[in-house]
Amino acid sequence: MTLRLITSPPIFPRFTCHATALPPSPQISTPTSISSTPQPPSLTCALHCSHFQSCSGCTHEHNLHHPVILDDAMNFFRRFGVTDFTFDSCNLWGWRCRAKLAVRGSSANPLIGLYEEGTHNVVDIPECKAHHPNINAAVELLRQGITELDVEPFLEDEGTGYLRYVQMAVTTHNTSLPAAQRYMSGKVQVTLVWNSRNETSPGSDKLNSLANFLWKKGGPRSRLHLIHSVWANFQTSDKNIIFGNRWRHLLGERDFWEHVGGIDVSLAPSSFGQANTRAFDALLQKLQKYVPYESSVTDLYAGAGVIGLSLAATRKSIKCIEINKESKVSFEKTVERLPATVDSSITWHHADASKDPFSWLVGSDVVVIDPPRKGLDTSLIEALKNISSVARKVLSSYESSNNVQEEKRPWILRANEASVHIKSKSPEENVPQLVPQTLIYISCGWESFKEDCKSLLSNNAWYLEKAHAFNFFPGTQRYTNVVTGSH
Image (cartoon, rainbow, N blue to C red; front, side, top):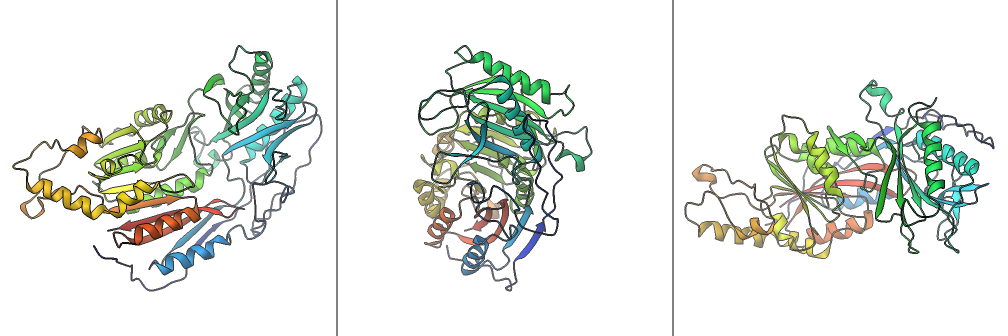
């Protein structure tokens, strides 16, 4: 296999800027009045945030539509032959629909926000410019509840207090509203991370009181109807982790649905979900263009299978591989809500994609990888780089078989994929396509991606076709790439 570069004429990257201002958050009456900072002008791509420099969430105050890292990306892809690289700046304010916030301070003066860079000192961030406005409103409601009910936030040095963290996730999936109104009317799922072993431990009365306060003031019978549901997570570890293993649904709807990529997606509080819902939806729509119809798709690092399932309508098979077993329930609920017209073979596997990676690659036309920020595991990189040797082995095995109809090959058994069917083809095309021809790499870790990409291209096994970037995290030096390669 030889290195192939795209030879389209050089052009400047195309930019799409959706720099629209958001209306202010719903107002919560609190014991101490907090004045709302003016929203940024619609024609200005600056942060205008009073927390900038003290809060670790945002690192860049100006030109949110053009992060500095973008120039590095343009040069990198041009060096490898991609001259039509595009960038979508997406929404610059109010984009974050999922937030994990530390709770510290005292019941009289709770601090709800992020750690100061390099410390465990929490910076209070009311009216955060990145947060969906209803997250900001829910934070203020929580602050009011902590104060009125005398709920002690967690004290790290002593290991005392009750409320350690809060996770807030917004669902904008409300089909009773016109599409244009759904985003701003999103409801907030609140998870209270409680410093106890379970719901019967000391302090459970405070937990229930706080949950009831949120539901009474922000539930469906309140003036605001801000809260979707309230959950508890129980965490007593002294390690630097947010969630424990025990979850409890307290109030509101149990199921949390979002609509992205053309499908309804179920996400549990423990599931990984993209923070920028609108940018993720744009990414999934773009992805549709690069996955051929009737192809077999393997989705590695799949989570609840959102990426793979968004492709299911017109693809032959979807196989999702995920190491977190908790994602299976969300996957199954999402499959139940797929349109009746979907006729793909769909499977989800609880497995580590880095263990015996060949077993997941064989049998696929397209492989989609969306790894953690650290990038790909070494074993998977090596398997992808040696894909040509796999092709030779597959061809040799096929030629030694006679009149094979229902294939029972070792690689299919190792993948636990009982529903793979090899269709009969014309004599000119009677060799089954059993190794992927297209690799789609989705990444939110630019430095790790560059290293992985250079490694995959180093032996000419793959070449780059297209690269797109989405501004998933305005105000930071991070965005998400979608890179398509072939071999």
